[in-house]
Amino acid sequence: MLGGRSLSPSVAALSAGASDMSGWILMGLPGAMFVTGFSSTWIAIGLVIGAWLNYLLVAPRLRVYTEKANDSITIPDYFSNRFNDKSNLLRVVSAVVIIVFFTLYTSSGVVAGGKLFESSFGLSYEMGLYITTGVVVLYTLFGGFLAVSLTDFVQGCIMFVALILVPTVAYSLLEQPLESTLHSVNPDMLNWIGAGSALGIISAMAWGLGYFGQPHIIVRFMSVRSVKDMPTARRIGMTWMIVAAIGAVGTGLFGAAYTYENNIVVDDPETIFLILSELLFHPLIAGFLLAAILAAIMSTISSQLLVSSSSLTEDFYKTFLRKEASDTELVTVGRISVAAVAMCAIYLAYDRDSSILSLVSNAWAGFGAAFGPLVLFSLYWKRMNFEGALAGMLVGAGTVLVWIYSPFTIDGQSLSSYMYEIVPGFILASIAIVVSLATKEPEQNITALFDEVEKEL
Image (cartoon, rainbow, N blue to C red; front, side, top):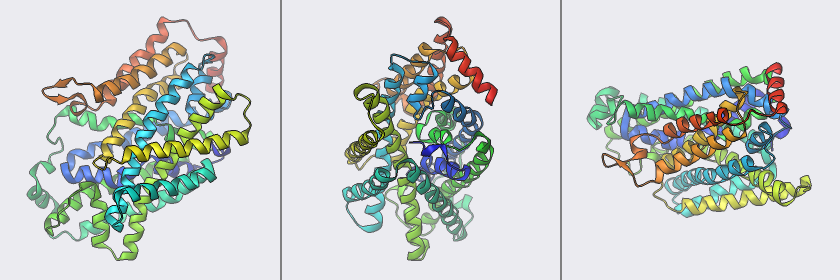
């Protein structure tokens, strides 16, 4: 489940990037740029800053802490060991959060796969769902974490090339200056604030807060062979990410200008990368570019299936049903769990009107608010205890769900359209964690472990 904590910095960094940047970097974000213009760039800026802080603040400490805390191999496992939770309540609540939000998140990748097969190969949307999921489930079942990480590395390289190639060629073929063409498409596209306000910019940049709590990304930090490799991993990971983000932004903007100049009708903005790939390139290169979308989708789905499966196996089956289960038995249960989560994701993805970006944003906010403050405080605050951890997780996840699904509105707008739900979720979860000060101090063995980690770092 962690590949023996033996990943090289390059594999860990590109694997973290590829599993993070799912189909939304090639479809969701370019689609948002295509529709709204420069105002969607704030999402990319927030994500780059968030990823950099994640490498800086979380990666080294989490690598050392998870090994010291009874060799924790899942995030719920870490929470349980970090706070010496004998009741297993932290483990169960965090595992439920992982399974609920990852099933949502995985379905976004499956939707992207369905759209890809439908628009590129003329197959039915449903057939695309089954093919995409089937291939990913196959290699995840047999290869586990190491197979997922190594395929992520290759998929990350393919995505990197594609995100340079498509916007560069699209820009080179524009006949008019970009600014004047975009103004003709929609004058609002040139407005960095967009139709919203400063609150809209804060909401967009707040995507970066989500990084601290994404299990499929931070688990890569736990698998690096040594904490000394972290600076190398950070440099590789951030270079990859900055280029990928610029490429996605460029694809949406240049795609809007190119299709306008050539009178091309785009029914679904999230397919602009597919449309440009097929229009601008020889079929052999277009095939490679379509493979990049599959790479993005597959790398994320496989990582999410693996984390969900490890939670079901380690945090439910082994903890409550079979404490003495052998490794072979746990691998079998893990494989069954992978298949089960995949089937749930396909079921959710049957709603073909699902927006990839909105599905991802809901799951991203759920993890960011439920786990982000908890991960940060647990790594840096010695006085934090079990009660604070549980309060933070419940308040973070609860706030996000209320913000998305409650019937309350502001000026006729839903709460989530007014402000991205991760903002109130993250703030309220952080406040809830301070419950630690109103309850008893952590036990001596917990503070001793914290001191031991500090010393090693």
